[in-house]
Amino acid sequence: MSPVRVRFAPSPTGPLHIGGARSALFNWLFARHYGGAFIVRVEDTDLERSSRQSEENILSALRWLGLDWDEGVDVGGPCGPYRQTERLELYRRHADFLLNSGSAYLCYCTEEELAAEREALFAKGDLPRYLGRCRNLSQGDCARLEAEGRKPVVRFRVPEGEVVRVRDLVRGDVAFECSEIGDFIIIKSDGIPTYNFAVVVDDHTMSISHVIRAEEHLSNTPRQVLLFNALGWQTPEFAHVSLILGKDRSKMSKRHGATAIEQYQQKGYLPEALVNFLALLGWSPGGEEEIYSLDELKQQFTLERVAKSPAVFDLDKLNWLNGHYIRNTSPDRITDMALPHLEKAGFIRLPLSHQDYEWVKMVVSSVLKNLVCMEDITGHVSFYFKDQLEVREEEAKEVMAWERVSEILAAVKERVASFDVVTGDGARAILKEVDKRLGAKGRRIFMPVRVALTGSTHGPDLNQVMVILGRDRVVERLENAFKRVAE
Image 1 (cartoon, helix red, strand yellow):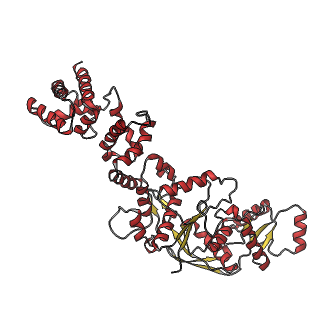
Image 2: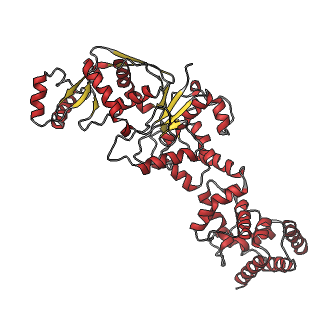
């Protein structure tokens, strides 16, 4: 295999989305697996919609996912510049070569003329394509049209009667009839190159060895192959990765979950969970294991195991993976991720003192088993931060209506008040002692206490809750619950 050089070339017209992130990841894994180079360049020729803000959003999202690059807009490299708008002279030079060789020509057709041509083709049931009205204009024709004030585009002259054959590393051999393509624009009237032309010039001048991208670009491939051939350049290897569908097998959209990487970052997903999930969208390592670090993915990734069939975006699986990573990362890291969500909910005010931080860390650690993403934490820990609890669950109300609840709450309160500090062992001892003294069994003791302390029948380990709340707050909540039951 020749030196591997792959690229991720986003258009900076919005945030990095799931599909783009997967393409970037597959390219990165392929490059790192074979010891090659990963290049990030920016296709910003959509002048109206492109922005540096979107560009930075995309680069920031890639960094958050743990991906680095060897060449690119922010790190430079020998093949720069890496923004298309900074390479316009290069495209113009190669377009002139195609014009001079007869592989391209000037086209003066107006939008109205092209629209009428498309409508006529539709009416006949034919594929819409350019029929070559300006293919054989003389110099005099060009001069006359320019005198009318028409600004030409540059069109590529598609060979007639030929078939473009592409050996795709994922999809196998694919053939395209040139008769169905039509002469296509490579330079617009404002001098800006079209996608298909710019990408060919960039891939060649950056020595790209493999083009790994989404299946939706497969239809662009014959045009690009024709351009490579006309320019006398070797084509890179192509690999078109399957589409991402929702669980209902329709095209991925917002109703299947967030589509932008920054949304998952804001919700409190861990980047390693998202990377693990994205890697398994259309690629399989071949075993039953589903948990992979970035280094493990890098070691195992090959295009041979990329599937032809569409990948299904399963939010439940992503949530399961994220929950796994949440429970297996450091308490300090998870606490730091939780802080913005707790502050937004009004539970804390940053910055925290060391003592308060350690207390919040205990709060966060107590609910890890219930978390899908860090955004969920506020609903699980709100009872820790409230001065007054409301019992709204019907099941919790039923618990507080059990016989002897007042007696149980009073007994537990009395024993807690006798401690200087409530520890985990102390909390267990208190509940066991009250159980033994009153002759009530297990659930009959701890369920009323749980509702009194948390307002719910579900939640963190009760002993842990008592430690985190501390003696005084436990006593206060038990007293308040006793009064409500006695009313």
